[in-house]
Length: 83
Image 1 (cartoon, rainbow, N blue to C red):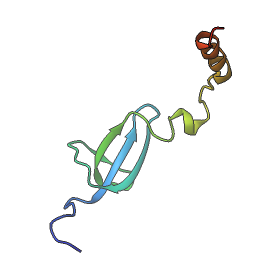
Image 2: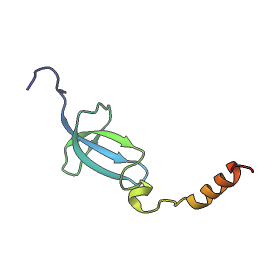
Image 3: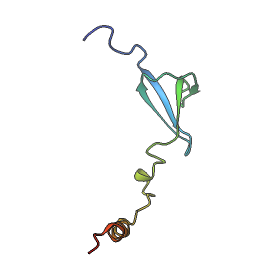
Image 4: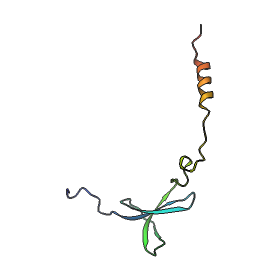
């Protein structure tokens, strides 16, 4: 392995989805100034997220379906060749 190209601070970090109050811990090199006491009693760096798999519409199944057929028909009607 080459020396000097790998991050020095690879450590466990807690990521918290603020919209649904969901947290998970993974190893990361992200820099943060906030910390949190995890369930095991240890203190870990904290990264606050706006969205995760627990709140994203694609993963939760609450995704809005677009009426693509109606949009295509409106486009064709608007830009159809005129005789």
